[in-house]
Length: 334
Ligand SMILES: [Zn+2]
Ligand SMILES: [Zn+2]
Image (tube, rainbow, N blue to C red; front, side):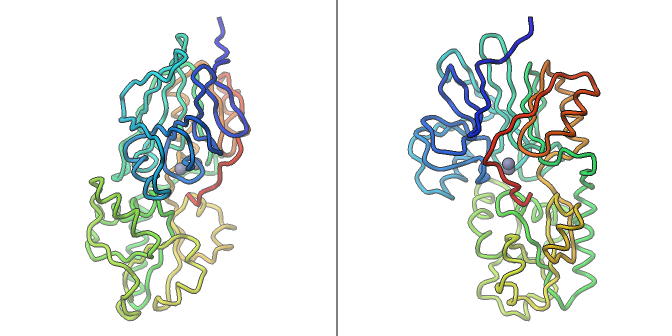
């Protein structure tokens, strides 16, 4: 018998689990939501009940203030949602607290990956491969052109640029949740122990990561630091700050950006980036295809990005697959 997974329904506003009346990463406020991780396009405020990992709930509280009813879902804890549906959160390796959701109902197992990656990341638990009948996978970088280099290579390029430009500040645009902390942690692993300077918008999330046990070393605010003292320093800021007046506080800044999109020359040019760092918290093409092969589900649903090439790859490798058109998920500068 071919399972049809009728109990889980892709709606424009998210995935709806009918027997339990629960949504996953809904794009609008709902009664009960399972939230895979803290990025704004997945974690929205205003749900009657939010179920997420303890770290994701802490991130959401930091961003939105009081959440209303919240249920912490530690990794590996199997919880009855009602309607005969059980949910278990499993690590996704994307950012701190990020999770895949395993749903079980009527003998069928479904994994919703949320955003994920397979590369090691010192700031979060690694992705766990989980057997399932239906895999619902993201596809942000679902084109063969996207192959992320090892992060150590990109960090070495960042450190080399700093050595080469002792009179300039190296200004690294990085997504405030996840990417910023990963770049900092990787700099520490590479042996860089000088203070790292932060744009004001990065401070809260870095503090939260440190409180959750992620070692980031000495961080200093740019605010209150003399311009001359920033020469030869690494400064982390949101991507949007690279082009605005705030960057005039830096001595002759080298605009850098840490993003999977830095693979695309046009984006590098558009943003005026001098030092593009191809660092992504999403699976690249090889990770996406390897994960589908490894999980080897009876069926794959593809969402959240570039579905077409991955759909074609599934067809060529004799896998049942379909593309979903969910709305409300953005590029997130990742
Ligand atoms: Zn994300
Ligand atoms: Zn996302």
